[in-house]
Image (cartoon, rainbow over all chains, first blue to last red; front, side, top):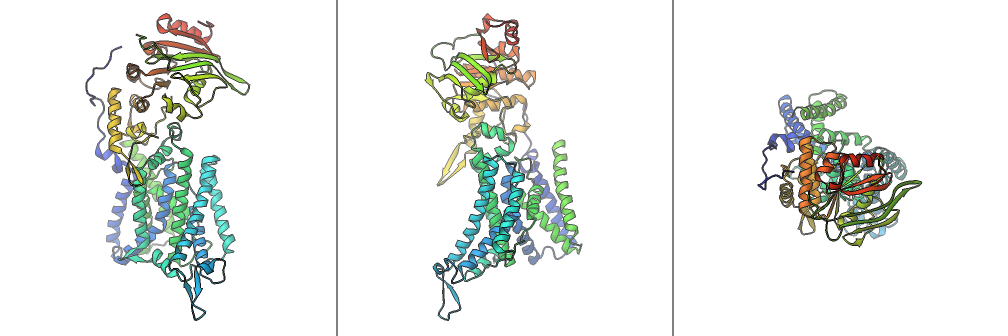
Length: 360
Length: 254
């Protein structure tokens, strides 16, 4: 058999992929980002109020309220899974946080004496260590989310149940538990640390809403984790070809559990932040938010079949949804149209991507 | 075709390997040796026990009885990673590639090169791309490390899957139907990749249905039928007609 000559390798038969055919330029995220910029310009001409500072702050705050959860679910979607329990998780974590916070701040409640004492007037409650209650209660909310995420991950990765069914069940279980612990009533963050809580969740820093700052930070961390760590690479590999991932020795079970835990933690954190803005955690909070969160992720380019997605896409999807909502309000269009339009955009975004991938 | 490598200690030695799945006897009394730098063709009809044998060597299954010796030592594999740890690599029929990742990412999947920054370890993209390019060069494949696998030809995909086996200096590479689904020109490429491995002293086991490929690259052919080894002959002492007869059962054993 003829052997090839021992010359340096040349790429005579293999062309280089052009810059506009790879990376973000060839992704749904890129196209949706372009559409978003177009929409922003159109909004500027349609309404003089759109680019005012107040409205921008409003938009930034509103989309941050689903964007952190969207970052979390993007991990799950990249592995080819789905998490429908996001909305319930938001509510339950928020509820646990505010219940723990008010519980620990009420003298006479179990454990409260460690954290608070009554002031000399016998009425004012004073924290022993300012901020400690806040930390403990937020941790309580996040640990709850962690446990739910572990259960989801265990059922899906170890027991091999379908992600859709498992998390559909979890949606109901967690929402139900929320009603059980609160007896159907809402709970309110209260006590001496409540002011810190509100400052951290619905306050702002130099005019930038706090949730937006958390979002940017978490998105940056997520980008690094996805593209520059082996965990991120395994997440993509799992979505691309699960069998290959298994055969190449990737710890598939562990990675799967981890993504569901990340998703639940993100939802829990999101819920806690939203409850700070609402001023309470009602038992029906964030009902059906899982659909908004999944819609935002999908519009931003995460592929439900797995293997594709990222933080930029998640944020772009959330911004697009919020700008449309905001724009319809400013244009005085009935807000009932919003849902219809969101549905149209989901289908359009996926359709454009399908057409593009056939042409290029 | 030389069998110069077929001297000294066998890299893989199977003794009386048997495997039962419940009442089904998939393999029975298989003895086999593979030497360094040797290309052995493993042939047989569907259900002859080829895949079971490969899966036992690769650590997917444990044999019901018999002994596997690798490089002189008895080995017991519980998972595919155990087999890989001693130097057995498998190129699977569907190649086990993640389409959405780049060639370099696929080569290093599961054993990424990392750089430490304090408590964090980040992927070393440059080192992986450079090493992958080197491996593709060794295999004479025109494959760019940064290209996505989904944009590649069948031959390039094979090169990526084979490059993966070169990472750890494997001593035995098993290839399951590497030429089943690719074009004629790409078959040539894959066969020359097998030659590259042989040149470097790697033992190759080629599982294939395609008689011309086996006769083009193999030094020896092993024929399985009904869970037993029916023939183990140097390629010079046999012919495609004889092998076909052995596979179909027209000739019982040789």
